[in-house]
Length: 266
Ligand SMILES: C[S@@+](CC[C@H](N)C(=O)[O-])C[C@H]1O[C@@H](n2cnc3c(N)ncnc32)[C@H](O)[C@@H]1O
Image (cartoon, rainbow, N blue to C red):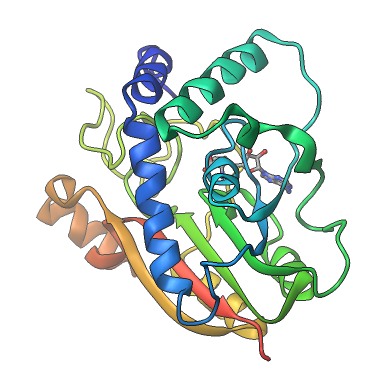
């Protein structure tokens, strides 16, 4: 369960600029990864798949002059306290980017389900997605849709929060990235072992090889790598042996974010 202090800590991280620095670091990796296949110096047509309430990559890519569309189930008018808190967080985020507030404008945000993308075939140069694929409950349908809406030669760049990482169950702190501490009374990798803590969001529980297999059905995988490591210090010989007997490797158990880059055939 998210701890009570997570919410103020999250606000503090956005205020201090930690969040924007982390998102800009992801953007730098993406630019480097796709540069061989796309000319990122020109204005690209980009889909941010599951842009989220903070809309971080939507804002960053728009600030760079790209034509960005975001799709997410959360892109609907809301008047709750949570919605107001996110509106403030977005303003702080943009301030830390030193970008105009207009980059957060919702005019290119679509409320929709990523399993049925409401866009014509061959629409986008790049589809990007951060920390979202692990929540999609029908990954094959989403990947097939992404392949349909990408132009020939277009690229998908996906950063996936891996289920097998210590934070992969989304039932521990969401503000420690990478996760360093497990609360007292909770076992590391609880979500793969005793499953005592409930998950707070829908998760497909996929492993890295499953994503790679489905992506490979539609794309040429041009690069894939572990972007963020976590939990090396939590993986005792006992836990490693227990989970190793179930087929989990140290490499997989300590990878928090995995990047897959695929290109649609030209
Ligand atoms: C952890 S958030 C990540 C958001 C954003 N990419 C970020 O990095 O802040 C995952 C997002 O996936 C969205 N999502 C999950 N399933 C979806 C679906 N089937 N269609 C559209 N959005 C979905 C959720 O609404 C949520 O905003």
